[in-house]
Each structure stands twice: as C-alpha cells, then as structure tokens.
Image (cartoon, helix red, strand yellow):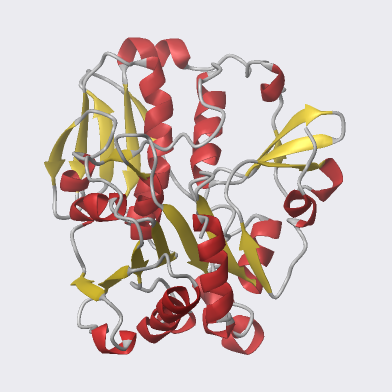
Length: 363
C-alpha cells in the first residue's frame, strides 16, 4: 500500500492542518507514538486468547461512565465489538441519552436516568464488566507490509482493538466500528449545518460570528451552499450575524432530533463537540451521510474523530502536537501564556475553513 502525500507529512506540525478523513498508512519511521499490535492484524492473524468464551456464556456490561456525548458516541465502538460475540442477546441502555440511543443502529431498549453513567448491557445474569474510558486505549500500530504501518488513532478503533485483544478473538471490522444513527430523511442539496456550540475552553473556539464568516464565504464563493441551519448553545442568538443569509437557528436541540437534521445536510461544520461526532455517525437509507468538518482547538484531531472517510478536521498547532504525542491536555496544562496562541481557533482563516469544507463536500 503506497502512502499518500498527506499520510507522509501527517506527523509534521503546521500552523493549521486540514486533515482528510479515512484510513492512515504511513512509513513506520513517521508513525506517531503508539503501541504496536502483538499480532499482524492486516495479515489475518489473531490476538492471544482472552475472555471471549466467558463473555459468550455470561454476557457483558459496558460501563461508559458519566461522560459527555462525544465520549459516549465514540465509546460505543466497544459495545459494537461485544455485540459481535452475542448477536442474538437483547441489549439494554440506561443513562441520560435514552432518546438518542433509541435512534442507534444497534437495537436496544433504553431507560432514561437524568443523572448517572451510560451503561449498555446484555439481558443476562452475572455479565462480564467492561469499563470504557477514552483516556485508556492508545493509538494502535499494525504492520501492513515491511516498513509500513496502519495508524489506528481514531478513538472508535482504539476502543475496538482494545476490546478485541481482551476478548482474544479477531473481530470483523477493519475501520469505523462505531455504530451509526440511521435516518429516513433525505439529502437537501445545499443545506449546511453549523454546530456553533463551543467546547472547552470556550474562548479558544470559533464563535457564532466566525461561523457566520465561514457561511458568507461558502455562499459567496461556492454557490452550492444555499441554506444554513445554526445550532447554538443556550442564551446565544446569532441570526443577525449572518447578515441576510438564509438561516434557521436552533438553540440546544435534543441530540435525538439532530439525527434527521444532519441527514438532510450536505455539509456539517462544527466545533469539537458531541453533536459534530453525531453528524459524522448519521446515515441515510442509501448508506450515505453528510460531509463533516470538525474544528479542533485543544484535542487531538486524529483521536476525537470517527475515522470515517467523510469526517474531516481542521486542527490548530496545539491539536497537532497532542496527536503526535498521543496524549490529552489537562486543563492546568493549557496555559495561555505558553499555548494559548497555538490552540486558538480564532487565528485560523475563515476562508481556509470554508475552502477546505467545500473541497471535502465536492463543491
């Protein structure tokens, strides 16, 4: 497998990186920090024996903890992995996102609890417990041929391969194992959704006015963008910033309702938050889904992504450094005097974001 030019330069830090989604195969000496698989998965080898037989006999419980929606959605790759061993056993979800989980392609009953962890389990007695923590699985490196490795940096594949090794059984998926959220809604050509809900820290993310500038660029230079839907956080109004562009504003919609909204979109541009991940996991009846561009300020853009070839990223220098080092930044480490400028998305050209998003969408 011959690496593309992007793959070759992937681990060089730039002022801004526009990262195309999909699988990454690079020369071994240019791989990021990660853990080499002890078996050659690409060659069909299996991991060392694990607890698969116990899981089949007793069932399982996946405890995703009291996490945000991004951790939940990407962590469901563990649930998908365990489901492969027990495909006929009914599943049950309990936690704050019951309505959203009813939209998941994995069939399961759902019970809502306003507070507490996200838990998915089989309807069996004495299930084997799996703790799902986004901080634990490393980037996995798989030797695909002499001198070349596939980099499994996206969080869903990290979880999936960690579970595969615990089970000791070769699982079916080679990429994008997180379950999808299907919708019967059809594509509306030219519909662009902007997820302006900021992540942490808010001051370093694009603000509504920045997204409005991107929308203006798309409308002016790329005639394909004809209508915009803007998702905002509570107490934020932003329609006036769009200066006459055709726009609808939704204030903190329920994530379950966003599945149909995302299915109708041709392009989604969003902050590094759970709704943007959900957009990348939304699928239409024909198997397609929106093109998604996430904006990464202070999280590794190669980790907090689905791994789908329609899920792309714009990353600051700080996000790129975290990707290279394969680590997350503790809030105490994001010191403005040292790293504030390197992590500030507001330094990123709005025209660059618009042009890259349009290119990814094929406009």
